[in-house]
Structures are given as C-alpha cells and as structure tokens.
Amino acid sequence: MIAIQEWASLLLIAIGAVFFLAGSVGLLRFPDVYARLHALTKADNLGLGLVVTGLIVRHGTLALSLKLLLIWLLVILSSATACNLVANLALRSGIQPRDGETDP
Figure 1 (spheres, one colour):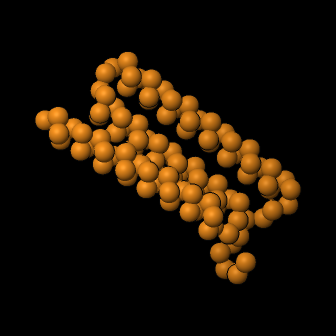
Figure 2 (cartoon, one colour):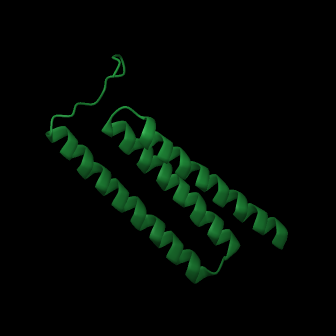
Figure 3 (cartoon, helix red, strand yellow):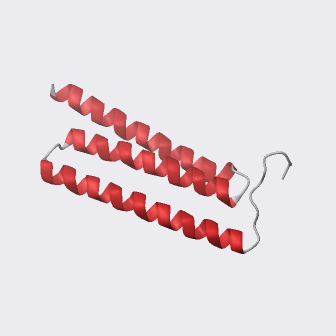
C-alpha cells in the first residue's frame, strides 16, 4: 500500500511539473499579453493543485493537508487578482487583444 501511495504521489507531482512547464512555454510562445496571462494562470494553478494533491497523498496528515489546501487557495486568489490587474493595465495602455485572424 505504501508503494502505491508513493508512486501516486510521484505521478501527481510529475504531472504538476509538466503543467508548470507548459505555462512557462506558453509565456514564451503566445503572441500577446492576454494569451500569456491566460497560459500562466491556468497552467500554474492546475500544476500547483496537482503538486499539492501529490504532497497530500504522500504526507496525508490532516493539519498538513489543510495548510497545503489553504496555500493553494491563496495562490488561486492572488493569481486571479494579479492577472486581472495586469490585463486591465494593458487594456488601458492601448494594447488590444489579437483577434486570431491577423498575423503578428
């Protein structure tokens, strides 16, 4: 049972790391600030959720699980707020979102 728990934890953490990597690639590859923000907030929040789940599976005490879930909740709230602030600033600065039909 312990081996299955360790492998499940390792798998969840590895998949979370892949989502972190995907968000970083999206930051580098996407064409405008809005798409980049979308890639970072979605991929990083999902990646952190998988890492937190993997850590909960590995060290499943109630106190640690609640702390990790609280950290994840705070990161979700702060990243959504920061994303909204950056997108509003970009829009007020005159940066228009791409419509997808024109080349950069």
